Length: 151
Image (tube, rainbow, N blue to C red; front, side, top):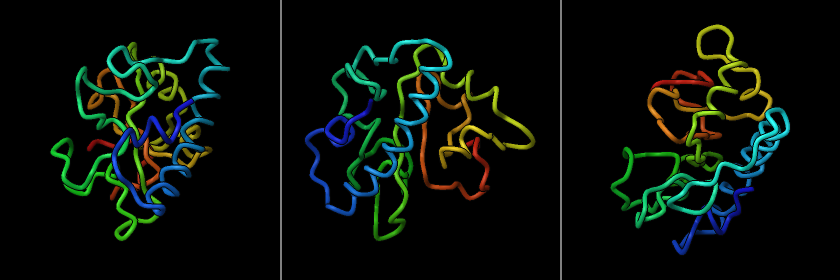
């Protein structure tokens, strides 16, 4: 289970950002629970962060919340949880060292970027080809509206 404390780390954040992150983590944790039950796997703990959030050793914890000044990712990243621009959008990079989560989610793909499991949990993910060893999940729809999309 990914906790708000793991998501934010020691980074300052507003109540609105906490609320957006809380809504995201409810969805992500429910998806992860479904995955673990269906596959009989253990939680996928990132060796560098010690949590289910992906990140680099000695990194700034940018697999969860990112400050607006973060250089990781693109401008307007859902990791920055900017309520003024999108009060309902947030993102987290879940550790997926063996790509088991992405492979499991691939089994729910139908059509062009549609995914029944992501729809059930109201989530979107970056295409696995762009996210080796992690699974980027967000409740912010990309411009394409596809559940699985290329960033």
